[in-house]
Image (cartoon, rainbow, N blue to C red; front, side):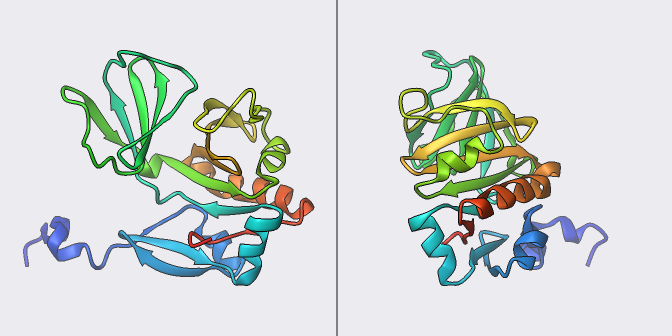
Length: 205
């Protein structure tokens, strides 16, 4: 074994497990974890989590979602409108910067600079009929249909810190802030969800 052999993916990948900044709080809340794609992912909290996502509101740690920042001119820039393409969300931030959430099956634009920011952004999904109400308790971004339809992408202040909000579906929002503020975001969301009769849910919900 050489001194730098630990840098070789083949020899180290099985020993490495990436962890969300929210894992400690998820574990305290009773999360059940599984290793998926090199990440320790909270996949469930019992039956109550599924009920919250259906009946009130649940929140799920999505920090493990791949996030790529692509630097390349956007020919038809439409601020505030994300596109679901090749299994990933393409979210325009500026006319020359796009945030891609997921792994695009069709590849990336040629002549572009790509930066992996997966571990730069912590992420939570808000899921359920009260998802918009939950967001409104700590964020002023308007996610009502007439302002932010499905596919709407809004950079702005999230719990008094810079972040992003993506409306992925009718009752599902993805909220992102800086990685170092992951625990803070969890605490803010958990407190607001509790008042709405909701709580944490796993990735399988």
